[in-house]
Length: 108
Image 1 (cartoon, rainbow, N blue to C red):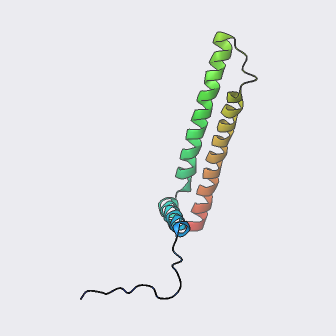
Image 2 (cartoon, rainbow, N blue to C red):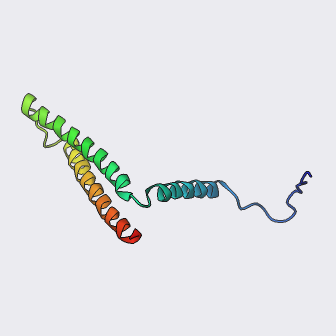
């Protein structure tokens, strides 16, 4: 049997673009929680390793500039960026270890 839809008589729809954004955000969070619920260290550790590796590469590049070419690196913003990425990577890995411990305690 075919369902007949009738046009809205009173009021207006509350379903707009902002609600669509919230639904997509909810789907992303649900995917994250379902996938990394028992192993959050994989998520935080993966991000931390990538950040730490990029920071290390930036600092290695600056070290090569200093040692091989004799350029001054103290005034470069890349020095701050490299240290920031390296420290952020260490913090993310540490957060992953703590989250892993909490998940194991919770599930036992």
